[in-house]
Length: 98
Image (cartoon, rainbow, N blue to C red; front, side):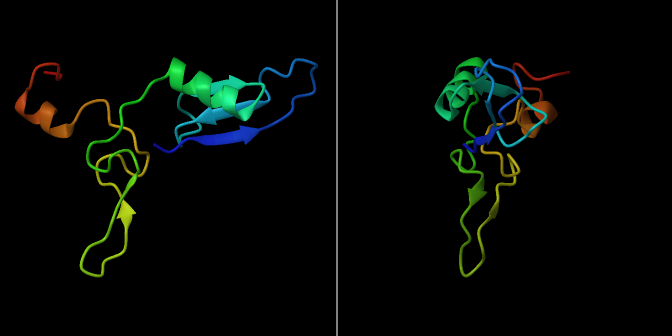
């Protein structure tokens, strides 16, 4: 699963929010911490994600027969499982929307 971290020291004495971490989408869930490790831990504990089953959480699938590797067609390179699989929505499996 892809996790992106960013360091930005704010002009305040509190260092608990200098590092941020997110799952590849800056607009999505974010973890904060005084260190990079603390921000990643805050993200994983606060916003757990299930790995995409199609790419095993890598975000890409290997090419075959000379083709190049490409972003996963299910998670679009994020490595996390989408909230609902499109097939569940089409055939009405338990837990899907009507």
